Image 1 (tube, helix red, strand yellow):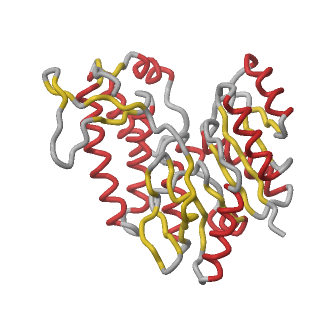
Image 2 (spheres, one colour):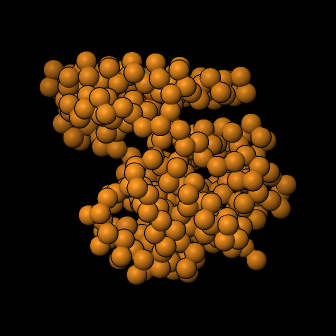
Length: 310
C-alpha cells in the first residue's frame, strides 16, 4: 500500500499556509510535515494553527535554505515509512484529487517500463512541464519541486536535495542528477498547480512599451537577492553536468544570460546587481555554498526594479 507524505518548506509565511495544509490534509490525513526554516518567535501563533489542521511542524533555529528545510521533512517522512514524498512551497494549495492524479501517473509510467525519477503536474503556474511524449507517458524537463512526488526508491538511489545551493536551482540540480542516473521525470496529464513566479514588469524603452514579434512586452523578475544564487548555482550546475547533458545545460545557460542582461538593465542601482552577479560567479567558481554574506544581503537590499509592474 502506498504511503504518501507531504512536506512543506516555510519561511515567514502568511495565513494562506493554513489553507494549503488543510487542503493537503484532505488528501493524506495526518502524514504532513511543515518545516519552519527559521522564521522566528513571531510565527508561533501561525504554527499552532498549522498544527491544528493536521500537520507536524519541525522548527529550525536559523534560515538554512529550501534544500535543507525540505531534506529535514523528507528524512522525517522516510523514517516514518513513507513510500513517496510530495514536496511543496509554502504558497502552493492543491485541489481535490491532486495526490491521486500523481500516483496514477506514477503507476502508469512504471507499467510502461519507464524508470521514474518523480512525478509533477503537467502545468505549473500556467507553464507546461512536459518535454516530450513517450506513448501515453509525458516526460518532463525543467520540473519545479513544488508539487513533485518523489518515490522512496529515487531518494535512496540519488540522494536528497543539495543543501549548499540554498534556494534557486535546487530542483534543477536534482532533476539533472536523476537524469544522470538514468531516471526520468514524468507528468500527470491534465493536472495543474497554480503559483506566482516573481513579478511581471513592463518592457519599455524611453517610456514606451516594447512590442516585438516573439518577444513578450513583460519581463518576470525575482526578488533582487535571488540573482546572487541564480548566478552562483548556475556556475556550479554547469560544472557538474555540462558533459552529461550539454544541450540541456547550454540552452538553459543562454536563456539565463539573456534574463540576467534584462534584469541588469532594469536594476537601480545597476552597480549593486552587477556586484551580486560578480560575487555569485566568483563564489560558484570557488565552490562556496550556503547563505550569501551579510554584506551582500545589504547590497541586495539597495536594489529596486526601475520599471512599472505590468
